[in-house]
Length: 398
Image (cartoon, rainbow, N blue to C red; front, top):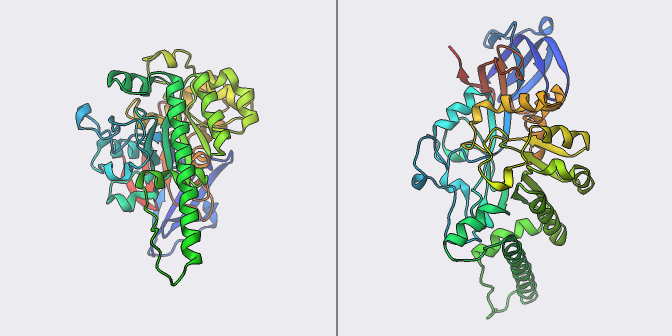
């Protein structure tokens, strides 16, 4: 049985609590207990880490990255983020393109990031299925927490730019929305035919059925979206694209997440009423496109003031994953309270992904994903000194 104790440090739980001179017991990859340092009695076989003067937080979570499919230092034509031949590719699985030797995984560990959702890019209207993975490089299946985790889709400039150049639809925002609706309607029709065929087959049990239902791999991949099992994870910067994403989600009763939501501050009260979840970023990036010209560090604060659920993302490699805490600190500088800024890269990110029962806060029974800092985590001068994933020390600054 693996047993570790982290003693003497100050624990920030990720849910607003601060525990001085705390002791965390980690057993078999989980947080076994949280107590005062004076209360623990480690066994002789236990490994004890004296973290006096250090700050202990949950491992950070980046809910929107392209780690593993857009490897550090690789040329664009060697990356696997976008399949730019058809605007509708829901059957693609990012799991098949994750390269565990991407240097970004080591960068993530050095930045205290223990869990990410890695996604297809935003070239296609529907781009494929994402995966939630731990950041310790390993056999991909051993890294996975959830796959597929969401269906990536995109509105706005990117699909228009890609397919106008290829002389294919979509050429406008209207075209993007129409193609997305068309794919969802086809999936609905396919589901109805499949259910009818299965019902007919059941009624003919024991008899030969000449009308065998032929499965469609592309349509099959959209069925979990229609059933709300998978979120439709929509790239949308501009306020019109944000509204279109909400409109389509309501038309088809979908589980929606807004990715980037750059102009969300302009319609924050409306978004609150829609009870959406938003991933904000990469705000540190340049204003490289028209649709991000209104990006601002005020967005997280304004969304928080209006009660909109959000997290903060890097969109690595757009901006580096290892500075996720710095992005939260810049939101704090713009007025977001410190506790909310830390939540935006821990428990709120976990809630965005639907994995808050396992990660995102320091609580008994959760995965022992831990970051240890030599100062306050939202101080840009602070560094991660140790990172644990599932109770294993995976990064140690020497």
